[in-house]
Image (cartoon, rainbow, N blue to C red; front, side, top):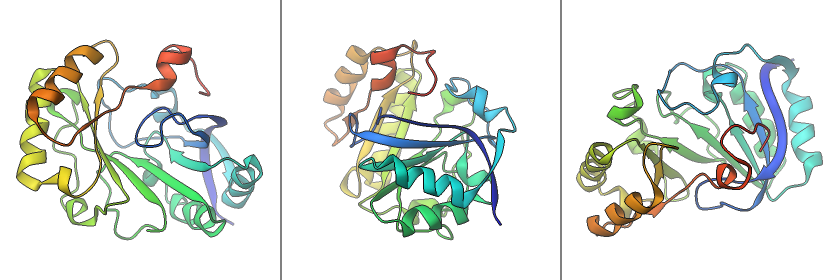
Length: 215
C-alpha cells in the first residue's frame, strides 16, 4: 500500500500553460523542498496534508472524467509515493501532467506523463535549484516555465533560452509573478525578445482572484 499526503483534490480549469482553459482534475500534494518568495500555494507547501492511499486518489482522478489530470503541489515529486501515484494515473490513460520545480531528477519518474518544469529565476529566492540533468530530460511534449518577478528576471530567462535553444525544443512559458509584473510589461518584453515564448498568465487568478483555493 502506497500512502501519499494530499493537500487538496479539486476539479477546475487549467490555469496556465498550453492547455489553459481546459477542465482538469487537480491533485495537490503537500510539502515542498523549496521556499519561493512568491509561492501561491504555501498552505500546501508548508503542511503535512492528509494521508491517502495512492490507488484511491488515482480512482478519484479517473472518476472525475476530465480531459486532463494534473499532479501538483507543493513539490509533488518530493514525496516518495508520488512515483507510484503517477504510475497509476498514467496507467489509466488520458492526458496526465506534472508540475514540478525542476530540482528533482525527472529521468527516473514515469515518462508517460507530460512535465511542466519551473526553472527558478533569481527573483524567486530559489535560483540555482534546477537539477542539471533535467535539461537533457526535457522533451517536445513537456513545457518549461519561468516565473518572472522583474525585468532582470526576464533578461536572465532570455539568456537561458538562447544559450540552450529552449524555444526550438519545447514550449517556453513566461509567467508574470502576480502583483510584481504586469501582463502589459511581460507582453512587451516577449515581443522585444523576438523569441518563441508564450505569455502564460494565471487564468484561475484572473477569474476567481488570487486567494481562492480549489480553483
